[in-house]
Length: 120
Image 1 (cartoon, rainbow, N blue to C red):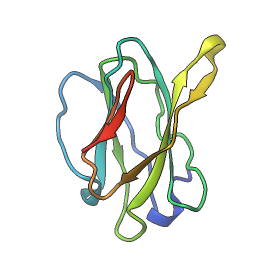
Image 2: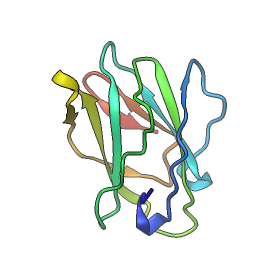
Image 3: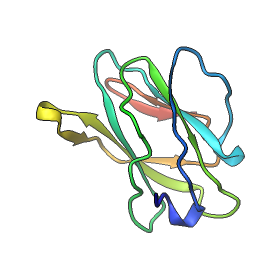
Image 4: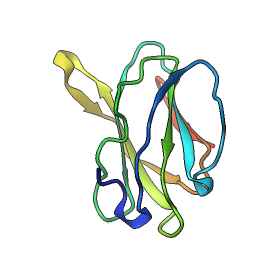
């Protein structure tokens, strides 16, 4: 799977429900993606470091209350990324949200809410 060529990323995502087992930062090679919506399903998470969009980081959809750990290898590369979330739409289509800028090296958590998307 090709994920963020400039960061030499390898996606290793697993969906978890409940509390986070470990928290880290992008500089340590991983971060958490949370679906904090009331009823929306996340079906896609894509990143772009300026050299094109990644494949979908998610292997499974995230229903409300679930989260996934995103792992990558970022010894060198661009910390400034753009990400875009894909939501489950009508007839199993994917509806892409607005683009969000992120410092992938500083992110520990990415929160996907009904009316806001943010990270810390």
